Image 1: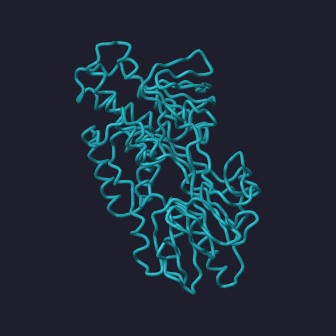
Image 2 (image 1 turned 180 degrees about the vertical axis):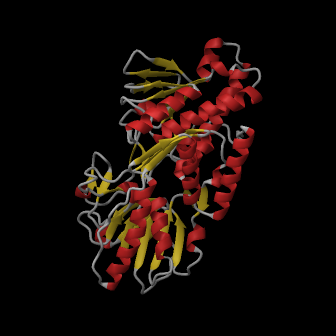
Image 3 (image 1 turned 90 degrees about the vertical axis):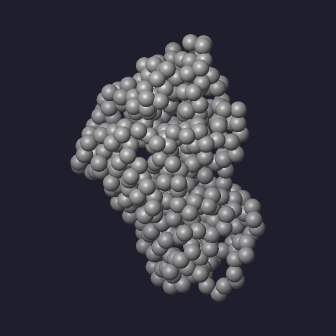
Length: 435
C-alpha cells in the first residue's frame, strides 16, 4: 500500500461515510498515523441522494473528495481499496491492493440495501444507496418519459408513466414527493405531448402509516402533503414480487410499471473475518459496548450504521441515520486518544437532535423532542440543517444556489441523461454494495 513505517500508533479506518469522516477529521492533528480506506474516493451525503435521482442536484454537489481530508496532515493517508477481510489475530486488514497492519481498527462500513431475501426485487428493482445508483434512477425516469412520448401502445405508455416506490420511510416519502413535483412542474413544460395526469406515483408501505420512525403527527401531516401532491399511498401493502414489468403485492393490488424503486430498508455491511459472536445476525451489525469496542476485541471498534450499541433507551441499537454516526465518530476520537495515553475510556451517550423529512416545496415535517411542526417552517429548518451538515464550502454554496434557482423557477436544472440506463443494466450491478 506504500504506507510509511512508523513508530506512532496506526489507526486504520474502513469507510468514509458520516462516522468514518467524523473520526478522521478529529484525529488528523494527533500524534498517530491514520489510514482511511474506502472503495470510493469520495464521501456521499446520502440524505440528498434522492435529489440527484430526481434531477434537483448534480452528484458533485453532495460528494466530497476523501483526499481533501487527509492532505492536511503528513501522518494521514487515504487508499482507494476494497476491504476483503480482517485477520484480528494478526492485526491485519486484507484489501484489494494489499495487506495493512494496524494498532487500532475502526469499522465504519455503514449499511447496504436490505431486500429481505427477495431475489426478484434485488434483480429487477432500482435501489438508491450510492451516487451511481441515484444516477441510474435519474436516467431511467427521464428515459421512460422520452419513451412515453413516442409509444403508440396505451398499455406500454401507462407502464412507462407508473412510478412505484416500496417503503414509506424518509427516503420513500422524499423521493415520491420529488417525483410528484417533477410531474407537476417539469413534465408540462418539457413534455407538452404528454398528459401529466397519466403519470402516477404509487407509494407502498407495509405498515399502517407513512414515516413509521417518526411521530403520529409527522406521519399524518406527511400523508396529507403527499396526497396534495397527487401521490397515491397504499398502506399495509407489501411487495412480494417484481419481474421487471409487474409489481405484485400481498393484496389485490398489482401495478404494471417500468420504474420500481426499492426504499424499504437497510442492513449492516460487515467485513469478513471477525468471530461470529461479534455479529448480530438478524441486523447484520457488530454488537459493541459503551466505548464502541466490538464484542470480544479490545482494539477493534465499530461506529455508525454497522455498530449496534444496546442501551436502555435504544435496546435495538441507535437509529441507522447520520447523527448517531457523526456523534460516535467524534466520541471515538477522544477514546482512541485516551487509549494511547493509558487513560480511562468514556462511555458514549447519544444526544437525539430529532428527525425530519421533506415532502416537497414548502412541505416538510420535523420532530424535535416536545416540538413537532410541519409546513413552510419545517421545510426551512430542513434546508438549513442539511446545508449545515454538507461537507465543504463549495458543496454548500452550489446546493444553496441550486435550491434558490429551483424554488424561483419551479425548475430542476440537472435533468440530463449522462449515461443511458436501459439496455445497460450492468451499470447498476457494477456498483453493488459489497464490502
